[in-house]
Length: 104
Image (cartoon, rainbow, N blue to C red; front, side, top):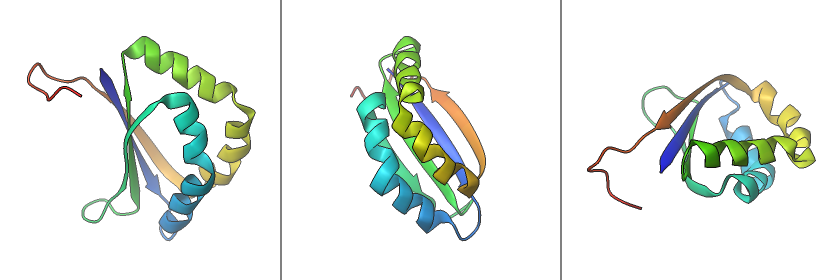
C-alpha cells in the first residue's frame, strides 16, 4: 500500500468555500475513482488555510490507473475551474509504509 498526501494552501479567506465546494461537488467524484479516502483535513495550527487530503492505493500502478480515470471524467473537468482559482499552491507526496507501520 502507498498513501498519496496532497497539501493545498488556499488563498486567505477562501478555506470555508473550498471545504464546502469539495463537500458538495468534488469529493463524490473523487471517491468514485480514487477509492480509499484516508482523510481530508484542514489545519488548526501551523500553516493555516491548508487542506490535506490522503488517499490509499494498492501500489503505484493502482494510483496511476485511478488518477487517469479521474482525469477522464467530464464532471471533474467541470468542477476544476471552480476550485483552481481558490488554491495558492499544491504539494504532493507519496508515503511508503515502513515494515513496522500498522497494517490496514
